[in-house]
Length: 164
Image (cartoon, rainbow, N blue to C red; front, side):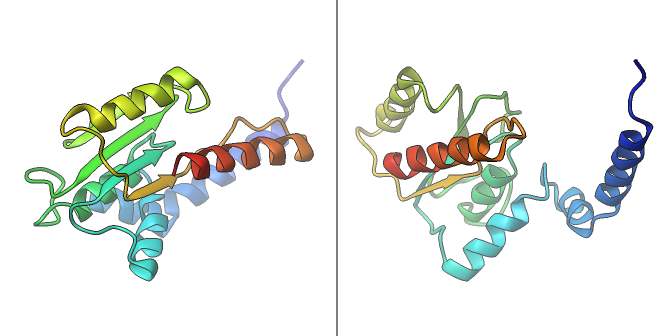
């Protein structure tokens, strides 16, 4: 059975659109791993979410663009490396390339042992640390069944809110 030639056209069209997307180009220029950094930047500039000294937990952190943005925001000089005025912990089921100053935990946030590891990491350096901000870009694998997908998404939102 051959693949759907129409699907190939859709994939090529998406790829062409993605490559030419101004946010993709800007992310590449600014050194971000994904254009998603600008979603968080816009929210932060509007709401003033991230402040020096904050402890930020990034749920669904891979590929790391949100953690990169937070890392730069918590740097006294706005740099991607060097001194950091705050704490960042990223968590995702998928692996994430290291980011200086970001502690990464690979695991499923829905699993109690992963949540326990996150809590241990928060307490590791200075005793229990208050989390100032939880950001989440978690998304379940979608099945294409709208009601099931909506329930999975809602469950992840509830877990993130409960943790926060």
